[in-house]
Image (cartoon, rainbow, N blue to C red):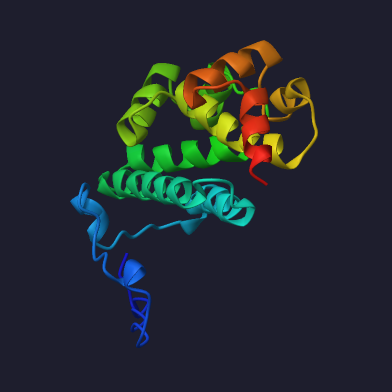
Length: 196
């Protein structure tokens, strides 16, 4: 894609806070210091919404959490743009978009095979090349990330939240949540609400 215009960098105002102006780049991941171009910016929306939620709620260490989420989002964009523009990369983008749009529904290998017209093994290989993880793992992680907002902002039970984000049972949801986040969903809710 030919880029006609870049968004101009805003000049710093005189007397700007030096804590926010001294950082010129990301030291531990050089690829994030160069422009990243996406053909479809919609893939950023869920990640940006999550960052916005963290910044709006402003729990303890929210700046660090928002920074970490932004870095993860940029890394996933960098990985996606590093893929050559092939049918596999287009399929990976479509697959990720499909999973994000339908995460609350039951998603089976057979369904993905029918949807993308590839064998389940090939779909998993495409996903692993694009994200570094399997379709199943990506879906679990995405469901858990979507459940965090429900834990903080609603009074739904753990079972209701599990069903709402696509898990078959509250037990499997709790186990997956604890494996990814290091604590149970109920403890996560309690800790997040204590700092409101």
